[in-house]
Image 1 (tube, helix red, strand yellow):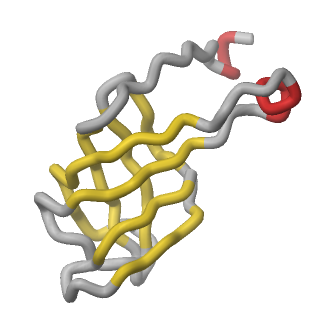
Image 2 (cartoon, rainbow, N blue to C red):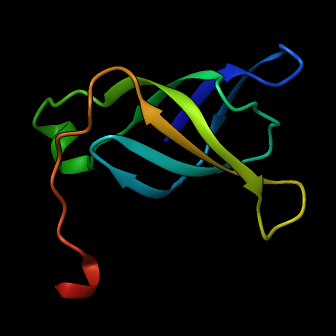
Length: 98
């Protein structure tokens, strides 16, 4: 996923990261940037290569930071956002259930 916004000092950043948790109303991810609770972020989640070949656009929305804590790896933060724009509508089957 790609996250774009301003860090706690007001400096614009853009980062490619991976989601740790994803649901209809929000997402959680790791970042190396210090973001403040209440910050607004732009979020883009690419669909699979199969969906891209079918012409489906990536999922794009906005989110508000509702949770920040230090991550297990040094220098990273675990951030939770609540989507304030479109909600994620895709359904996925757990790989462990396959």
